Length: 106
Image (cartoon, rainbow, N blue to C red):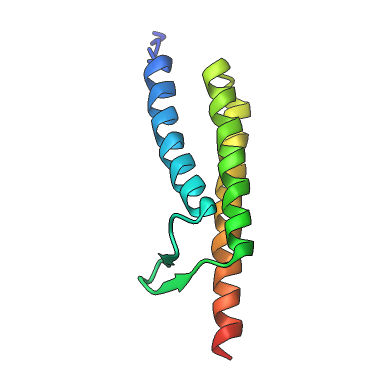
């Protein structure tokens, strides 16, 4: 017997767009300078450098592109690749921040 799974692709798309919108708004606000300080994963506060603001601006721009692609059509493979790229960009920002912290501590 074969079962057919029904997927609410419009509901999934709407949920993803809401999540991406939240990420875009955060990244845009940081890039614009509305936040002077952030907290890392351990809760330690740090000032945001111009270089970090530039990375957040790049993240906001790419998030906007992903949102536009998602709103046009739902190509799951392309969208998964876009999400992985976003994750890598966020991870890169975190790694570089940690490296800066390590250099400052020395």
